[in-house]
Image 1: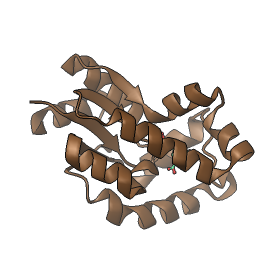
Image 2: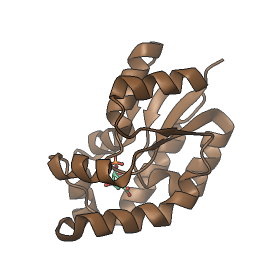
Image 3: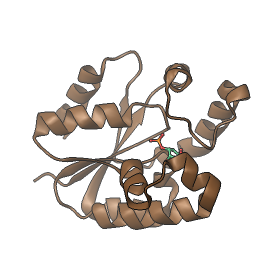
Image 4: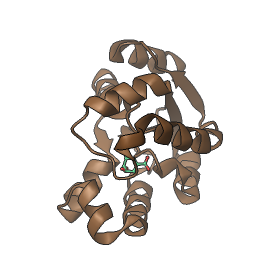
Length: 167
Ligand code: S3P
């Protein structure tokens, strides 16, 4: 039986677009944790970081993620930092399946560069360097995921196909 499928990985790795397509294919609902946080506080992620600070955002991320990762079959896209939180990781271990959408840095860089969605943690003047630093720091944690899907030059549909094969 399917559990809650949680897509994890770097910002700009395509978790949301892959997640939407995967949910459609599996006929499940799709939840984006960042969007849930934005809806709850009626503010964008960047506004929350600026007005309330990162610790507030991380707590909201923890609460909302832990509530929604409950075993109910659905596809969840977790914000890039969500999987670093041990409580969230434990919830996934109990009630879900984690899939690291591992996109290479070059592709992440291009996606982020053309995205209108500005990420508060990034120094856009040194984007490549900042992304590499965050990726290197987080890689050992992302590696703990149940499955790793390389999603480099693949189209979204190819990545979804690879995920469905391993489920
Ligand atoms: C973050 C990633 C973002 C968002 C916030 C922090 C991170 O989500 O949660 O800007 O720490 O990597 P996406 O991975 O959806 O961009």
